[in-house]
Image (cartoon, rainbow, N blue to C red):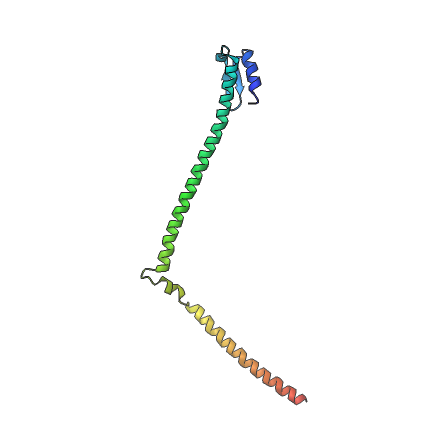
Length: 139
């Protein structure tokens, strides 16, 4: 739209070609015989349509990307839901029981911790008894 004045001056000067941004070099000899107001209106319309077409193509691309993203999310969610359900249910329907079972390594660690706690309690009692004897002997 900023080039409209220059374009109209070139048409009035009867130049044979004009370099129009976004369209390149154009022949304008056929516009010499057309009414100046009509050329100006046609130029306005062409530039507005070009700008509008950029918006339209951008929206089409955006909508395609959004549709693809939605389709992929729908597919992933559906497949993940099936996989999670099959994992929870298991082949014989005992998936939850299997998930709640304690692993042997965890069971072994728990037993070691209980024995350590028992040993520490016994050690505390023995040290407390020794400390009592020392304090009685010092008096």
